[in-house]
Length: 436
Image (cartoon, rainbow, N blue to C red):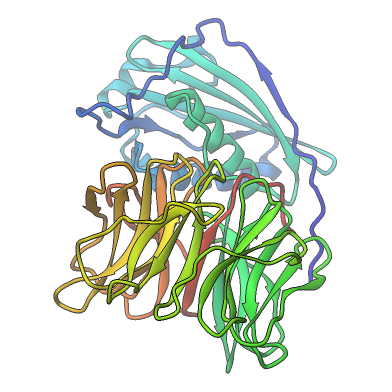
């Protein structure tokens, strides 16, 4: 098990003389279109660091394109001379960037001191020929991708006024021989780390804060819930009652865990404390199965799946078990609810009339349903990005189960998991420090 130190990555911000007073991309407007931005190769102060400068720029382009918020222009179309241009307004040929369709321009200068990389980023409004942001980012010499992710998040916030998502990770289950491992990766699919590799079946990872994952394991032969610490790899049993212990979900404050137990003879939703103690039953449906709890972002409600009306549907109740109400009435097989961090919608998996699984979202207040995926294999197990703008999910469209991302409407669907190993049950974290 690899360790999980905190890598100090400083961010030094300096106010640009023409800092934009408001977000430059109206992401809520009906007339939204991806913002055209040019990101030429970053300059390095020393030629020995040119490869790292290129890597940071390449990762940054991929990050921004992944969000669907930006139209990242192809560097092969650029006509401005990289030898003549610098990173200041007076050295830039803005007409040349206008001619290739750029509204925004990102330039940077990379330097290395000891074990530290520093990237000075300059952002320009091409139409108005002015600088709108200048920031310096510092990070470990072995972390150029992480540095690029930090820059991407800063640009997202600069252009939209909202927090980015590239300092988060996606946990997932990976098949390994006859067993399944619990792993996590960066949002772009790189930096995969397997936290639980014990040769048995482990599944359904769920984040508990920034430093641990809850998961269901057959390590003792019974489906039990354990926690793995990402710092030391320590395994802690959380729920080991006879029968089913599964689908654990930590409350937003980390103090409670909702899960499915069959300790009383039927699959019901329970709550335990963060150590797995003091179980309290929330549902009581002797002739049905209640499962898959998902917390609202304020911790006051829980979405879950129940077949109490004859087939699996999405329900919502108070976190004390009160006021349960059915939320979905379309379709006859709805499951795996995931509550948006914005609190307004729940994503879920549904089987349609062709017996194909796809991703949908439902408005919690109105019950209005919107389809996210269609006609591209089976798509299942959605999970939200920490800013509520994107969804990750499993898709079989390329012949193997892989992790894809898209915006909440289903646009800009892209595969992010790499390699040929099948991936299952993704869980998107909040923003977090580095894993190494």
